[in-house]
Length: 115
Length: 143
Image (cartoon, rainbow over all chains, first blue to last red; front, top):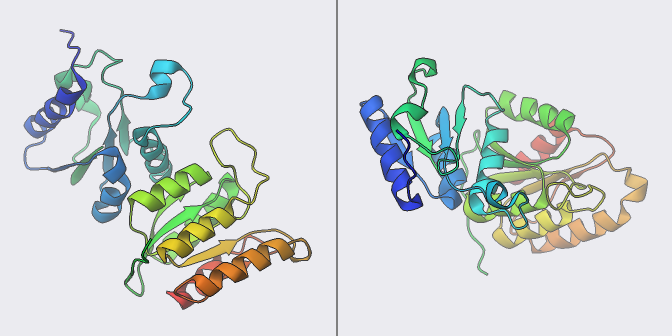
């Protein structure tokens, strides 16, 4: 099934999917501008980045939005370990919240930061 | 803009590291990790200012020459802009650069002047080599 979700529904849908899949795990959701501070406060082991990337839309970012800057900084600070983060552009991928997370590859995490 | 006050824990601080070369990032990370600090890495002036404006850091360690934005050249002393912003926000900051001290009079003058406005009264400036150990030691002295 293909779902094309409006941006304002994406976080709600993703959060529901995470909560159903990882019962009992703490999930913190933060706007892109809060992402770095939330990361410093929580030190989560996994960060999921959501949001529309302007470079995906235009092909060339001129004034990178906060989500791109936060994403670049945090991915680099996490060390680029692909087990430590998931990166997504839901609208472009015709996002389906239930099957997106590739459950067979996931480990149990103490916390999530969704920015 | 008013100064903010920071009260970091003495032995464990949240650091914003600004450094664009991978080998130097690895050196700095090793120093910060072995001393038990949490850190965020920015590689451009744009990223550094974004991080400073959206998060709370106990301290900052910055290179002197790095790009303004992704894809730009790294010959400009963007670190001076970072030091100025740290002064405005009262964030303790140290500059760690391999610039030859014989060619750094302009940077010494600017950083020294900014230090007179910084609430900590001092902005360590390590020159001639990327000695992050020394940079961190001096930074901790002003925390």
